[in-house]
Image 1 (cartoon, rainbow, N blue to C red):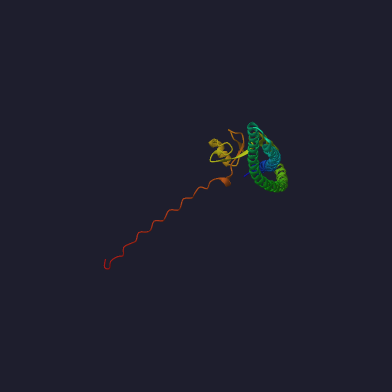
Image 2 (image 1 turned 45 degrees about the vertical axis):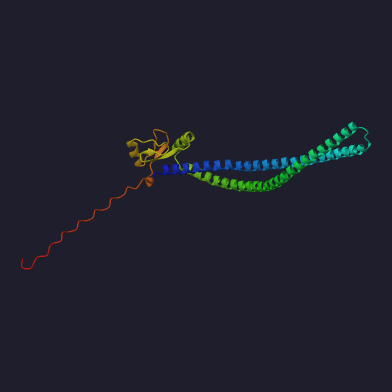
Length: 259
């Protein structure tokens, strides 16, 4: 393969690898963002659960005050039962006592429901706090991994940059200009011809072009415009026919005695 062609192929491989590494580097911060988002969401859930617990505590405090107030009322009305003089007064006082007791029962039920909610929320809070710790540790590890990976990628990019510049100096300027222009438009500037097709666009090449390529020329694909070459090292090997088995000689019959 001609040196210019070989260097163009190597240059394209270097450019493709540089682009791949750039995409990998671009995706790395996304991993940190995802870890940060997961941690923030769990922290928000923890804060909401803690707020809910505080509201339940405040609710039970309020319920306890109301229960105490109804018990005091009930006690006062019961004390008045000994001083009533008419059945109407007795019925009114009894009604107030029953109402106070029903309110006490209702408030007690509400307080019990609040305690049940609190138990569930405390379990949730313990779980979310543990998850916050795990996610915080994951975020630290992700940041450390990304920093290390970014350093590795920068070193690889630097090495590829040096290799790229060395290759570009070895290629004829006219070819390099054509290669750059095609690569900017097509993504790649050179393509291998294989089985009478351009590997870049999978379109067939004319027989004359195919023959010229096999002679080592660098041409242009009529379909996609890429520089086109043929690599004899990539050509399929034609199996050699096995040699024919030699026919055995005829065995002469032994002569009989006296013949």
